[in-house]
Image (cartoon, rainbow, N blue to C red; front, side, top):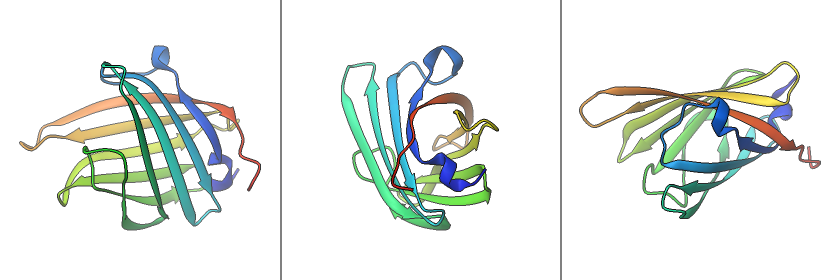
Length: 139
């Protein structure tokens, strides 16, 4: 198993997740060569608004600009090991979410733990289970 196994389209399984009720649907497309990463997320919220969130960057811990959301300005990514990605989202330079995405041994699910931080320093923990829809053939 390697970082390349993250390549593909992933859909949030709401029944097996503990995410805020504002999320009705979430599909994530990941493309990586093991160093560079491109992510495109399609999220439908509780108002049936479709948000398209995207970024391109690297797994070097540097901040990458995020497009399509007012929630965060940047996200940085690091590989903790070949099957775990750490992401840190910031708004106005302040950490608003830390996430850890762990690829299953069979490569068919990604378990994401989210730690959200409000402006008062309070932390909320959520969990999302993403199931593979398809593999990207480019990598």
